[in-house]
Amino acid sequence: MANKNTSKTRRRPSKAELERKQAIQRMLISLALAICLIFAALKWGAVGITVYNLIRLLVGSLAYLAIFLC
Image (cartoon, rainbow, N blue to C red; front, side, top):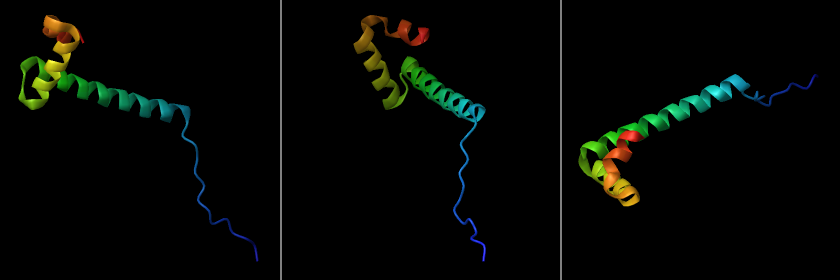
């Protein structure tokens, strides 16, 4: 009897697939950061106030300028 190959073969993702995956990850991170900065600029909720205070600790009284320049 012939020996059948029963193991699963995994193909490596192509360069285009890897680039697409990285682009999607960058887009999601950028979107999350933008939402956090909007919450910080408007001081909405605990997240907004916390992020605003962290930015204020880093840049002092220029917090709004730093938020809008990001």
